[in-house]
Amino acid sequence: MVERYCTHHHLAIAILFLIAGHMYKTNWGIGHSLKDILEAHKGPFTGQGHKGLYEIFTTSWHAQLSLNLAMLGSLTIIVAHHMYSMPPYPYLATDYGTQLSLFTHHMWIGGFLIVGAAAHAAIFLVRDYDPTTRYNDLLDRVLRHRDAIISHLNWVCIFLGFHSFGLYIHNDTMSALGRPQDMFSDTAIQLQPIFAQWVQNTHALAPSLTAPGATTSTSLTWGGSELLAVGGKVAMLPIPLGTADFLVHHIHAFTIHVTVLILLKGVLFARSSRLIPDKANLGFRFPCDGPGRGGTCQVSAWDHVFLGLFWMYNAISVVIFHFSWKMQSDVWGTISDQGIVTHITGGNFAQSSITINGWLRDFLWAQASQVIQSYGSSLSAYGLFFLGAHFVWAFSLMFLFSGRGYWQELIESIVWAHNKLKVAPATQPRALSIIQGRAVGVTHYLLGGIATTWAFFLARIIAVG
Image (cartoon, rainbow, N blue to C red; front, side, top):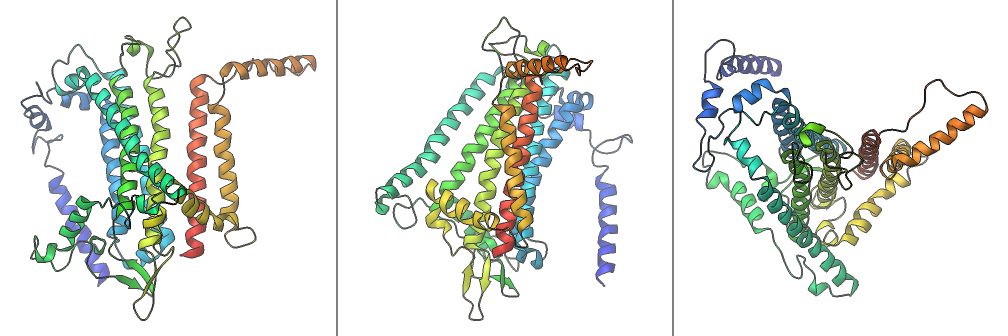
């Protein structure tokens, strides 16, 4: 019976896609013209609007790829959030290791795709954009307003950085001074996420209010009193939000905005800047603007992607740490015959995650015990990966914190020794270029960091989940 429904469902969706595939004009001249739609898209403050955009996307692979990466990256992150809040089948929701892996995987992939979108947008501007044919369309207007855009975004980043971390530093200080009554917490000075709670409540009550035809809300995570358990393990339940969530969500806002600042600056200043007006002639990646000009290193569009990758890593790390701890604290666990729920970390997120010290002590250190003590157990492979990935990560620092000249001098000493022994190679060895060194460095940094996190998460959740 199931097979019959699956087959019918696939046939039905195929027919729909055949029709939907002709919604926009392709080679067959039926459907809407994307060019007409884009060119009709004009606002009161946007000049020519999207005029000329169609030609950009049909002549530049980089522009096309950039748009697709940005949309696919955003969609991948949306998938990450739906896999736990609307799991397709209940057994998935009780397999905590798989749940954690799916979320982590889709967050990382989404982050990389979005950075890739910025990279290809910058390549498009450097290699494919012709400023002589574009005037007063939306892209031209954005480029002309880039100083206002970037300086405002910079101010937002400074504001978010000081205020989000400031709340944590305040809490750490009050905690150290023994003044819990002066901390921002659910039991002292409350900073409840009232808008998020309102959204949760609206969705939870939808069947009796805004969607009277619905039999149930779209997800148990919104709220209510229902809980879904399979074989004594919690699959889903309403996720409570409080002061701790308010604090960490502002860290998310901060890290995301800084990542966007770096990437957008790289895109908008890819062709020129006040410092280097002829940047377009130097290309997408260049180490510095020649030996005669000091202070012009790390300004290429490629360098912005390089720096953006570190902030993307930073942003996604906080997200997956938040998810891992929040779920262990407030969702995942067991349910007794009497209906009593016991969470993996006993609901400690609300009180522990409101200080930096709490994150270090009660999340990173406390939960790393499984991977650190895995030797001789069935989890020992994760312990080895944890060590090895740390090594890969540390190896990256040798490339990131080094000068090319240092290595060139060292190589020349080694070549001298080879000449002495008459085993010198015919080809003259050269140190990596500055950009090659950075590329090798950031690759190992990300690979090592992600693999370390993977080993840490899985050893922990397999042991306790």
